[in-house]
Every structure is written in structure tokens, then in C-alpha cells.
Length: 56
Image 1: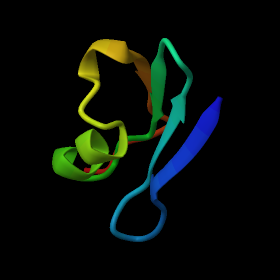
Image 2: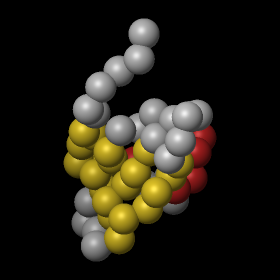
Image 3: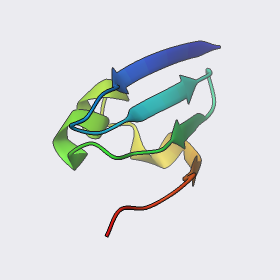
Image 4: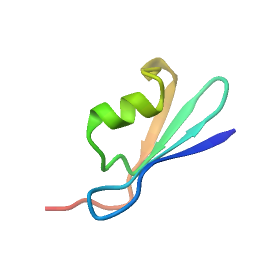
């Protein structure tokens, strides 16, 4: 399993846990283009997304 840090900071947080079969997104507070690029556009492998909080 690989953990990719898409971004971490005041401009947004996003992480991806990537295995051969699935991708689990964590936070996803980054622009969709960055998230898609980080998972090599393999949206069919996304099993879910964990979000801990939201901003107004």
C-alpha cells in the first residue's frame, strides 16, 4: 500500500491510500485536478473518501 500526500497546509489537505485494487481518499480538501492527478485518474478504483471536517 502506498500513501500519497496530495497537499498538506493552509491551502488544503488531501491524502490517498493506494493499493493494487483500491484507492481511499482522506480529506480531499484540494482542487479536483490535483486529486485526480495524484491517483493517476483511476476514479474507478476509489472505494471511498473520509472527511474529518468542513469549512464554511
